[in-house]
Image (cartoon, rainbow, N blue to C red; front, side, top):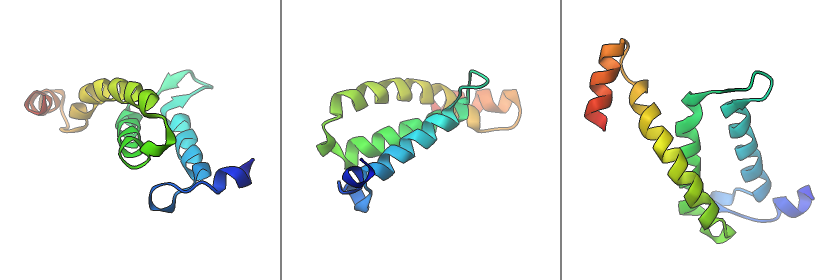
Length: 100
């Protein structure tokens, strides 16, 4: 199975096996099954990876699935990303309001 997956070439020479491993790692970082906790700081990573695969690997035939995931990830990223800036709650609110 690994040999079959590694034979499919994607953008910049990435293989399907590497793409799968990239998404598995992202899932593991986003959600901790042992504690049943999501790491919301990883939401922008999901957003970026979905955009990357939509733009650079459209030939995989995942457009509909990636579009749904993109819509969800973008909605979440729109809430999470502005909170990444600033130190105090007030700074985060001010910067977040300017970004939205």
